[in-house]
Image (tube, rainbow, N blue to C red; front, top):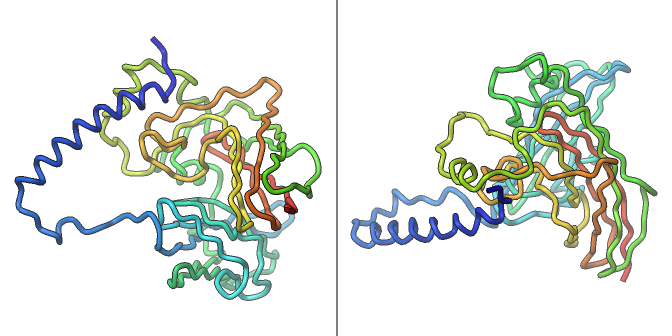
Length: 319
């Protein structure tokens, strides 16, 4: 029998209830030491750690500095406009960085191109979120150079230090948001977004779009087998807010581009995640609905598991 992940989640909840009941009984009859239960994860109120992921050369002689971040919150998505709390130096404060920060670890989120004569200078990204300031320092030091294999390894598509002829042959997916790059919308009225995503089929999908219930349960109960983050290979599209202070509802919901490792998460880092079935022509249609007026930059990412490609549109939203 084959089931989708939602069917397994219901059964998983029953198992979790039993596990929680057992844990509560244990806690009731076990002496409590508060120091042994230090809180290590948070829903809100924490800072965002900017991250320099590395650099790669461009065909025209310039270089791309690659950045990401770690949002220490599981729920809060801070909005930090470009300015005194979100800026680059030296030079232009605005280097195309996000102002909306998705939860948890977001690797290789954006790139900043620097000229061929950059030399040994540093480019510094400063973020101040919830009263805590952090910086990421980018340089062209040799140890920070990355290629496609490093990207696939760092994001979890490959095991640490491994590669194969298939992974070395992989190229990033093609992505194109069909239509105008600047659009208008009204609060509460859905905006249709059509995106074409095409890929070379490498890497081969780690899983089919459906699995048996027994196999799903086995995966859910299996202990971790890797010391690095693990990711399911499979082509998917994700839409998210890159800049803009309002909430945007995307329908249907799409996979997350961030490392949500929870079992039932709609994320390729989740234990039960299955690659979506995509149309043959690669055209995926979703709607975006805005809850307040303003200027939004929406971010589309196509990801095949190993590599990614991005496209953006700007939406002016009125009442």
